[in-house]
Length: 372
Ligand code: F0G
Image (cartoon, rainbow, N blue to C red; front, side, top):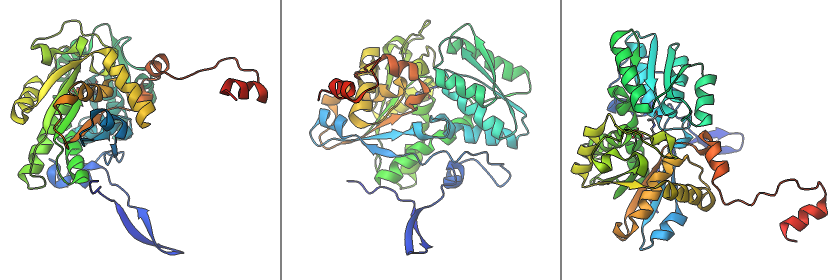
């Protein structure tokens, strides 16, 4: 087993030295030397980062040959997705620049993170979402965090075009991943993976939508290797939903469609960076069908006890699809980008659970239904 990074220190309680969890300061403080911040930057943080790297024995067993599989569970960030990594940076830098309002287009997670961090930083948050295609939990978050939500009758790509134009013309800061500080924050996930494993993995499997995260991971892995923190680099394996796979097809998809609404994107803005990551890492892009995504989603839940959202499961669906090609004994990390609670509707509609409704409230009936 790898040496996992430990944050324990020894405190002195009434019973002598006791291991206690050290307070995690958030990723800007933890990785300050690697980030474009200064003493003048007002750090807006919800203590994001330091998410667990969870072994996935059920998935590893399906591959065999001594392959080790880990899940980078970024659904445990404060708003439930990896977007918090980018947003602590983007909002801190917007505040440093004196901005009073931010704007983004989003399939849901960016809007939740933008709203939370903007409000915490005392700014207004405007979020444009594709009307009817944002999971319930994400919409609930944007509303509860106090964003001003504009549901547009068009897809994410259209909404992104609009917010770029608005940010060009009016005094409002764009916090989509075109904002370079977003990827700076997100690259810290790669640092954490290397810090936890003591080395970079052989494969990094990741869902790809607007292609910011794969670009950020690649930047992080390269920076760490250049600094001597690791001696190898992973192959970057990006997975898109079959109905929204512009990077696999090599052209824009006008009407993207998938159950994984987070990655329902037809024209990724970080396309060039993602293509570079693929080429430089000898990686690959591939499409996974909605059926394959749902199969992996259920396997993660019932086989590993890890609840992620459908888009996140694309990384595991992709790994299983390519399992013959994983070298024996390799270490693979699958990025689980968002928490399953974001999208309760999909979970309730797609599971293999036994659900017995209308049970009479007596012990004998319950025992009988249980099979006793
Ligand atoms: N997984 C989840 C859960 C996401 O929310 C996203 C993107 C991705 C993967 C893909 O990451 O865009 O960097 O390639 N969500 C954006 C949003 C588009 O608006 O929340 P990417």
